[in-house]
Image 1 (tube, helix red, strand yellow):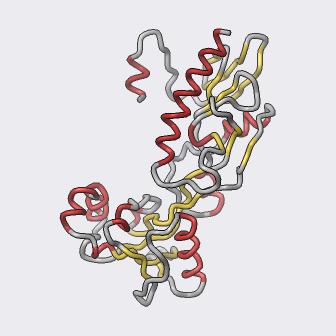
Image 2 (cartoon, rainbow, N blue to C red):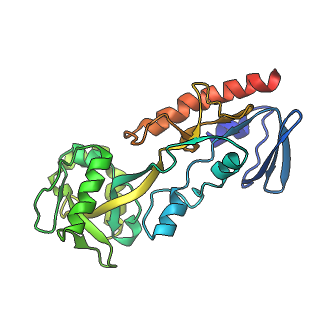
Image 3 (cartoon, helix red, strand yellow):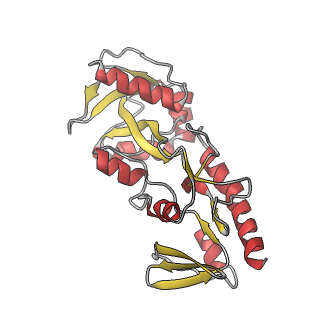
Length: 261
């Protein structure tokens, strides 16, 4: 996507220039991005969520990159943009817990679709491994709290994900990246169960938008994880990419029309 934007004629990009300030002007907006001051008739906010920062504050693991800190959401809120479901942060039920190179990795949910199951310290199944994300995450947390979990070598809570039940062919076709990463850390998921625990993954709530990605402030649009409402309080696997495509297109179209008006 970045390459497409950078190669588009007449489009200027400002890499490594995070939004610091946003002010309304008589003709639209003035944004201070890094060392740049940019005037525009409309603004589209697509800065993601805040899961990395929250995970750091809680001492937890997270699948997000270190830039997921939520400052842009706060900038919009300070300008008066309404929020919804902002407390609804989603945990991915199967975060990598060990080895160290896998901590914070979102273990593909296809592992469970191909037969992997969650086991407690007694190697017993304790939940429906194919259940909704929030239910599976809660079941894991509760099992550990009830003394049925295990610990990683660095003292983190975990349960087993028995990936040895996955057929070699299925793993080779659908899980090659996961296999490479685990094997690089000295673990073969097809020969031994792996350790897993829920990790912060996605900000379900955010800025209120309408069907054209318009926020509650004229001339301000939002799409992606910074926006709230498209997933309710519990997103299904794969829908975030779909949301980005649908509402990213709608936001861009509406912002362009608004800027020309």
